[in-house]
Length: 92
Image 1: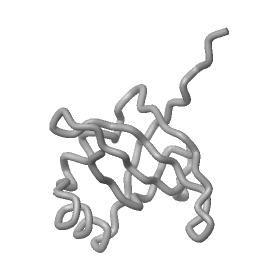
Image 2 (image 1 turned 30 degrees about the horizontal axis):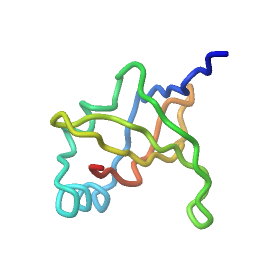
Image 3 (image 1 turned 90 degrees about the vertical axis):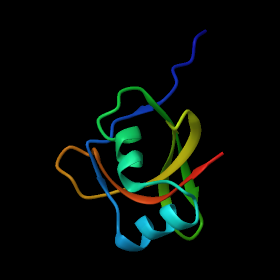
């Protein structure tokens, strides 16, 4: 039996000023390069994760500068369910 790997579509990525500052200064990831890695990119693999304090979120695997990045996303209000708020992003 072949198991399908879950995929996610991100049409809109909302990034607060605070989160943008964190990923740039603490993780060395630019906001625009993050957007290029995940927005309107087909086939992004992800898993759902239930955080005890922050709730339901998606952990997405992407690549920036040929390095694997984990991107933490929270569902945002959007008409098609493809709008997300950035929680964090970091190289692994």
